Image 1 (cartoon, rainbow, N blue to C red):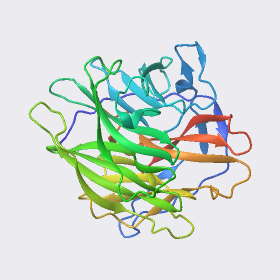
Image 2 (cartoon, one colour; image 1 turned 180 degrees about the vertical axis):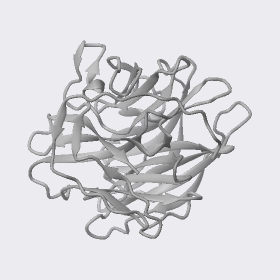
Image 3 (cartoon, rainbow, N blue to C red; image 1 turned 90 degrees about the horizontal axis):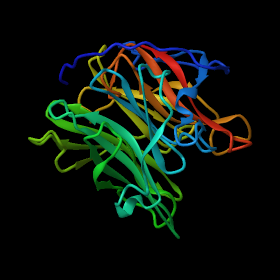
Length: 345
């Protein structure tokens, strides 16, 4: 992993919501690696504001990973996936001092057939040579058989306000004939002279999903070349109580000098570490939650994303930062919002 300049920011606290304590358990007891979460979950109001209306996003805000890059002046440019099928761009000095969101991508912007109903920016990186910004997109199309997800790519020369070159780069493997299926939720980083991606491979009705790896060489223009699938690398084995592995958050840890992947199961947020992206440690549970398919009250919790605003972009983590997520009321799905919890390693 190439060394990178680290830009330093500070974090402010926003409206606090007290929730029950969440547990943290060790990763690989022999090495004592842990990710510990704070006991307080903060409602992330800074990304609930919409520049188009001047007020909060409508019900359905927040529907996936949050990602960021730095502007040429060092400010944070934050991209939030939204349940209305679009992506909003925020900018500010810290993760809690952000401008209201501007709608910059969505099904109406993305001409790929696979994005006819949804186009959400899930991961962003800047090319240090050209300053071009690359985005990897969770796409969806819908038909009588259900949702079909795929992964797209686009680039921006306007600091993420407009996007060009939309194309579908990965589709799912071994899909069922119906249900929600396909390749989804890409999380991308640089590894020397290549891009690396972890993504969910979802099969459809009656089957769960695993996390797969894909890689692409960086071409002479700093863009990704052809993506090559490397297959399944993380699975929970479809066994109780976790069943599936979904929504990967791939990060290079500057303190551990290895890769980290945090992801969601049916009853937990877990993480694993790796030196080579193919062989991963045994899982460690960071947070336990209710069994999602049988839960009758409280909150559904999805899309755990590691964010460290001391870094140059969201593909890198240090010893401290936050884990963002999306909360959805079980009894009233119209009540939903983004939230975050501090972590330390």
